[in-house]
Image 1 (cartoon, rainbow, N blue to C red):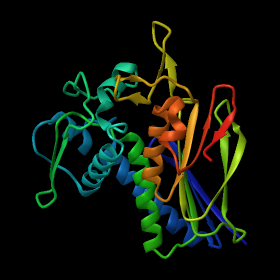
Image 2: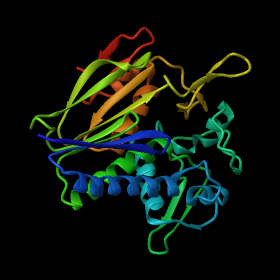
Image 3: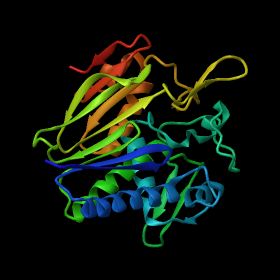
Length: 290
């Protein structure tokens, strides 16, 4: 069976589409859907552009601000993840992220000095198309998962039933793969991304990985800094693991669970009980959920 592939970049990651059984014009049309969905999500949800709707909302923290539908949906998803994770997933870590060194160069009001896990930080008026956040928020990780969710839904609406979309370490697979079997995805070794330490079989499922293999650095004092901020301490989480990978039906929820698992440290097995998950330690040893 013919397999068609397209690739590009979006949201700071390599973006790839694989479709079995499509000719080039049909694949080009499907790729345009994926590219357009990611471009729209990035335009609305990025914190790296002062003119983005998210940046405008953050600058007006505490006041009602018009928001486009994609941003409204992302805020609702982030709020739900925050509530269901008891605050382990908290998008209000943007100030700590900037303080750790991952700066966007966009002016923001101050973030809270402490994050309480049961505070209400979002109000949304869907009829008026406006929202109010109590503090600036970052939608980076869940935003990529949502872009995958939205791109997959758009392809299905366009009549494409079998495909795989990969955005960096996050993947969504629909239907069967090229051999009419499950899609096979490699789990990369954080120390050598060209090497797979395990293979995952996916049918109508998504994968997300939270990792410090790429986005980590040392500050002036020599401390390890990375982008996975613990809401409890507002510091980069102590890295018990180099990467955590979770399979879920939905890519946005896979993203949320992978971050919650990473933040759980050595309590990861309990935090991810009942989920398909893998975590890799600094020595390259792969651990898996039962």
